[in-house]
Image (cartoon, rainbow, N blue to C red; front, side, top):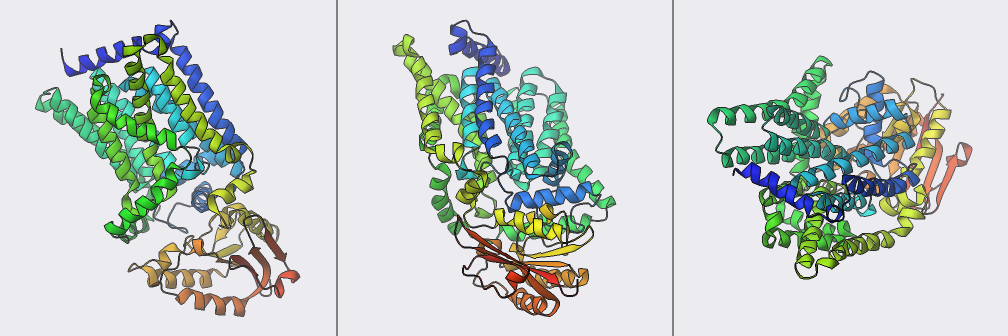
Amino acid sequence: MGKRSRHKKARKIAELKSPAASKGHSQYFYWAILFLGILFTGFIRWRLLSIPLERDEGEFAYMGQLILQGIPPYLVSYNMKLPGIYAAYAFIMIVFGQTTEGIHLGFLLINAATTILFFLLVKRLYDSYTGIIASASFAVLSVSPSILGTSAHASHFVILPALGGMLLMLKGADSDKPKHVFWSGILLGLSFLMKQPGIFFIIFAFLFLLNRLRLQKAPFRLFLKESSLFLLGAAIPFVLTCMILYRAGVFRKFLFWTFSYASEYASQIPFSAGVEMFFIQFPKIIGRFYLLWGIAGLGIIALFWDKTVRSRIAFVLGFLAFSFVAVCPGFFFRSHYFVFFLPAVGLLIGIAISSLKRLISTFWNQFQLLSAIFFCIAFLLGVFEYRVFFFMLTPAQACRVMYSINPFPESIEIAKYIKEHSKEGDKIAVIGSEPQICFYANRHSATGYIYTYPLMEDQKYAFKMQKEMIEEIERANPKYLVFVNVFTSWIVRERSVKYIFNWYQEYAREYFDPVGGIDILSGVKTEYRWDSDAVNYFPRSPHFLCVYKRKGE
């Protein structure tokens, strides 16, 4: 009997031994549980639908807004993200509107679809019982504030097509249909287009394909055919994107920002500092779901002693390793990067609980339900620990819990003022990393530098970028100028070039009048001063924003 046949037979046997099957329940039981889990986490997301956009969301929304206006990425606004995420946001806004709620509603559906795909993936790997545990774990971990789970970061948009691609790859392994391999490549190529770390899921799937063909002792002709189909599929989304951007006249800027500058960005932190940063950050990622993460650790042990799950050990360990590597580029280990790792964690939890069920059944067959009870306790304990965030805080309060004094709620009020006191065609210059202001106001930025982080980094392009940003602002003659005096909007380093700060003071004094003072006094209180009240206002907090209007306007 071939390896593929053994996998199919093992999966059927496991399915027959699952709790629902042993009680005569159909697969509808599992789908009902999955639907209830999606409804539960969907309710949390729905309740926090109007949580203010953070700056990454603001970037994606603003770039998506420009696309809907017929302006390609990297023409008048630049960053190192690949353009797939901008197109995804544009599509969401076509369907649900150019609002915070519309974006988060689209994200809610993206997360639900990811949960369903993950269930199908684990079900194909093992059985429905393991799949439901794994997908429930992923769903609740993905909404955790410890990974900024209510914000529609690019990482969520990476794992949706990545999981779809891996599911098709497994179907191809069981069916001998090359079309599955090709479409697997297409989906995984889309995951890369959402963000660069998606490349690691392509590499993992390709290595899995090669290993499968090796184990099957496939003839060289089949080996070449399937590997070529996969690579062709994976390349198509990126090649088509390059062609579109070339025709739009932005190909050089696209290459600079997404590869040249991105490589500089990713090489700033040495390995030793990265390891230290990981051990500082990882306990925060676990947060109050410590029991679920602990069960995931048991899942690694179960891989080696439980022969039922050991049949897929190569896939699981490979998936675990490449998911972790996707978190690591640059060694920044920011909270939302760990979204890449959550499906692997969910899979380990599913493995641990299903292995526990089999262990219990060896001694006390009538107590198999204890494994499900144990999982429910771990699940509900984490939910209970986060009950205030999930069920009590307002969207604005939840934003403060996750993002502290970052000016995300304040951006809404600033944009509202600018929109009411300007007309379409007027430009604004945000000196800081708050692109959500441009999105809310529906006004074009006077500069393509919607983030000022690159200007402060210890990299060779920093001073050139500062001069280019200054030249773009002066050339555009913006009607409004917003200066952001919040550390997290700049992250000034000891060796940062400070040229732009001296320029800003002279430029604002000569050409602008103050019309807004936004003083973030604490996480619960912000002082707003507008028009004449802003002229002589001096901020009491080190975290403030200043709004200026061009003189004579």
